[in-house]
Structure formats: C-alpha cells, structure tokens
Image (cartoon, rainbow, N blue to C red):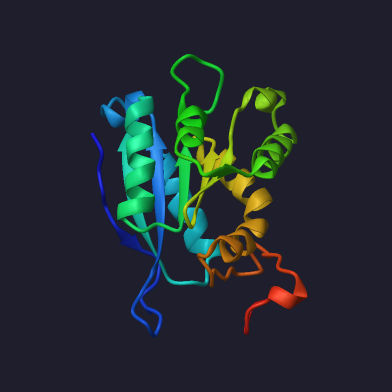
Length: 199
C-alpha cells in the first residue's frame, strides 16, 4: 500500500512560504507488505537532511515492485504533489521483479544517461556486481527522477557521487534554488549560474 508521510528537514521556511518537495519512493515487495522494516526512505532522509541547506519536505511512498503502481506513483508525485526531485530506492537489478527503471523510463519526457553511467561507476568502486544495475535518471516536466540502490550504505555512496550535479540540473529544468552544505556535498554550478550565497 502506498503511504504518504510528509516530513520537513528544516524549521525555517523561505520568505515565499514554499518548500522544495522531494518525493522518496521505496520499492520493495517485502518491505511494503511488512515482512521487514524499510531502510531505503530513512537512508534517503538521513543523507538529504545532512546535505541540503534549502528547506525541504519529504513526500514518501512505500510500494511493491509492480510497474503500473510505480508509474502511477511517479506521475502523482510530480504532477499532483509538485515534487521537483524524486528519488527511488530498490528494484534496479536484472531480476524479473526489478522493474523500477522500466517504470521510470515509461513516465519520462527525456532520459539523462549520464546519471545512470555515473551511478554504476560509483558503485563499481565498491562491488563488481554494480554492472548489473539498470539505474536511470530522467526528467518529467520540471522534475528530476533518479533511481538509487536500496541499502542505506549504497544510497549514501551513490548520492555522494552524483548529487553535486543535481542542483544545477534542477536549475536548468526549472526547479531552481537548491543549495547544499559544501562540507557534505559540494554542488557544482558554472560561475555564470551560481546563486547569491552559494558555495
């Protein structure tokens, strides 16, 4: 069953009263049915809480490995909930039930192949089985959707590697203003695109 548990990582809202909304989707048959506790969403929240300076709100979903449900969830988070960034965990391997990348590509306006390439390259530093991953990064409307691994350690390793490019990507697609703590994640923007006060 899909769940929504909005959480805020900061107590101070921007002047205009809006928050960056980030969709966090954990995709697991067993976790979604209560066989074991989900660790994907807590891992994502831990990393984002430490890395982001921009006030944000998490919109969470815990769902099984069912492609129609994954597609519906991604559409809802972007089109209805207004998330500018959606991070998924789980379901990216070669097993028959691993359909997260297929669902992500099905709802995409365009693919950003560099994200998938870098995510696999990062994971290859730690495990040779990273070549089995089918993770993708895509744009839907003005939102970026990234497929991440399911384990907290791998989530952190992957985000450490790819997130420096995320804020500028969000600028380019129309979800601007995401700032990071450079001690955790040194976001990169060309000098001509840097925001006032950004590192």
